[in-house]
Image: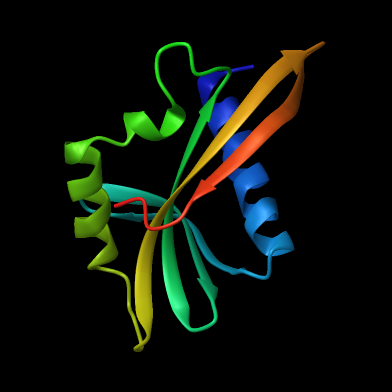
Length: 117
């Protein structure tokens, strides 16, 4: 399974996780010059910009720890280019931990960190 496949599977798992909790998924892979936002969702009038990190384990730190200062700046800069029509905004991180068995992507754990930055 390629890194791109792993990332896509993680983003799909995160979108399903949010949808099951009442979020409307507005955009996937919102790309503008200088950055990309994995998911943009909405719940209760709040627009949520979501960075998804997919990892096998946390041996080298949690997935969320990979959302560093430069990445945060890029996400916020890209979010400024998304058309908002009022309401609150929030920046979340979703960690997806998985294992690969017989070529299958199996989710072990999903952590949703609200107001991550």
